[in-house]
Image 1 (cartoon, rainbow, N blue to C red):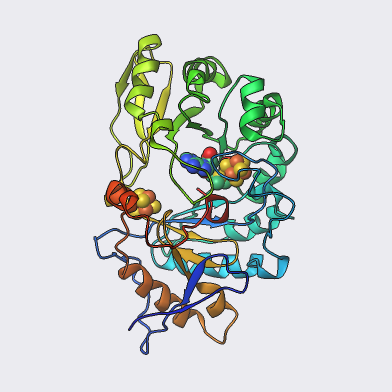
Image 2 (image 1 turned 90 degrees about the horizontal axis):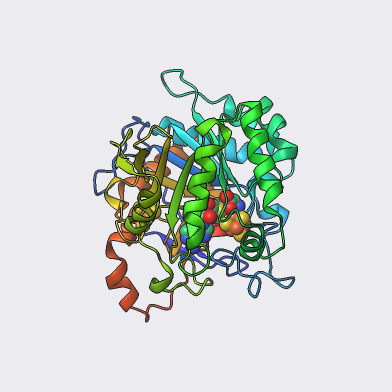
Length: 374
Ligand code: SAM
Ligand code: SF4
Ligand code: SF4
């Protein structure tokens, strides 16, 4: 049966109310979508706000004082997030990643982490609980996050050069504070730490080798640096293909200075291709979302700040789980609805990207990155 599409009150993104199956099936932990992909990973956006204005994500001209961020009443509460996460875990999710916006801006995020850290898989194992942050508040918060039960963090960092970094975050935030935050995260044991750099040709591509050198030589080589191709998410960043530096060129540039060799993937669905320095100086990863789509292994669902479930980073439309959470439905019903949504999934935007870019006539608005996280 088709879903009903309802406009949101703030006209932000279209969402449909999920259908509750008449006879809810119990979760098996073995869901497969239409392309046979399992559901193992849930990304939870805890706020749509951010203290940075990275031009590729929240350009200042759009996300200004007039921008209507979500009111507090729209956000899922910690109880609602935890309930939803528990239902996803029963369906096979093993990894929870908190994101945003900037997740460390969500008030009392440690309390949510403590609640999520209590969740167990059906076999009684703890989940892989992690968080992606711009690092600006990490120095202050790392210890509390660790104490609450967070296992590790991924920090986004686009340049070491202070001028370039300040320009890219567009709020004049100094790079030294992020580096201090990374050091503090390592000190308190929030590892293994990953650092993600979005590469924009002509903006920060000359920072690739300095970044590689820095993370080889510091932090005891224990930090894995990953280079992400600049993606055409959302509709506000003015994406152009000529600003994408293909990962193959990233590897070439690093290898010219510090020879690299490929490593086997550790897990199915791993987004990064892994490379190791031949001299034993650690490893780096490249995430080729544009030039080498990895949709066929995509095992991720995304829960927006206001409880809309998105099955693809490039989706036009979400599934309004909040309507169910705040309606008169029990866990079995909501769980069955989630199961049905996943089994109907056939998204593979990145594989179809070139064809879709030619189609500019649909008029549908794609979801923005700060709203569903990375
Ligand atoms: N504020 C946090 C941060 O920056 O780490 C978490 C949310 S942010 C949306 C998650 C990740 O998405 C970051 O690593 C960011 O660099 C990445 N990202 C945002 N826009 C992107 C784009 N257009 N292309 C590639 N990555 C992007
Ligand atoms: Fe904020 Fe992260 Fe987006 Fe930058 S990438 S604007 S830090 S949410
Ligand atoms: Fe997954 Fe969509 Fe990205 Fe493909 S484009 S890897 S389906 S999120």
